[in-house]
Length: 327
Image (cartoon, rainbow, N blue to C red; front, top):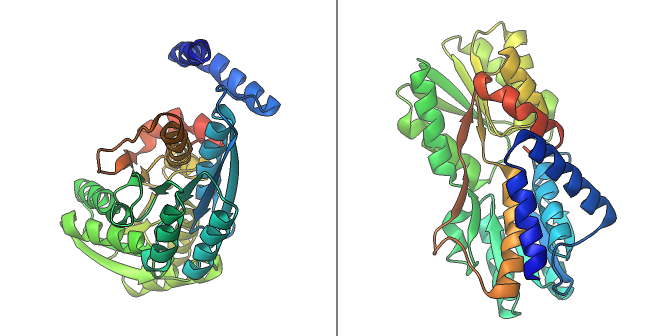
């Protein structure tokens, strides 16, 4: 076991150089393709249940991180999702019924998950929360929370908008009932020196999102910034801006390949990265550490993976990572 971990550590250190990074990435891909684990612990089963809707590329990145850690840690990884709180709770119950060895869950709609998370813990299943619900994680009995504090992230956006001299911002919420989205917009309003208006849209329909933003920009030409709360909505906001003939800057939470390209081109002003790959990877890895060695990180506080403000200057450096689905 020690020799194996030493070898893994050696590979990680080699990755500090550009050539070493390529070798490490090639080795990672090879090991993943062959399904080789870096440990000799039992093949534990871990389930992740998120509030993702269909087609949300953000969660593809989370899964990429989780799956990579699962290969390394000899984990049987299961994934399910629903943007409906009650159905998400049903998926958690299904994982409990399968007697999983660990559970990763998001708490975007905490009231719907509270009872079933308690059932998991009563069944002796360790729980880690990720991405959303940091303020409820400890109360619900989770080992720790991994993700971005949404209020802090919103405050970072407000500060950045102020630095850019913006006066009136539109915060576009695409999923009603998501407490994290409300916190992002509230945080922005707290630190922004200008005015913030919330706009609720139907996130499952991009035509509706575009028409709603377009109508708002046409009705109020004084809006000089639009903040979307997810990378897939940034491009739609750009189209709405163009159709409305607006000069507003489009900014977004989260990062993907299309956002990185748009930042480089100047189509977007900035993005807020919360490192979703890290959320998936660390959640699986920490459950493995807990099972193997009773390790817990955070000391009762969330393990933060963001926020990081990404501008045109950083986009080029991160683009290769976004293309491979890890940023």
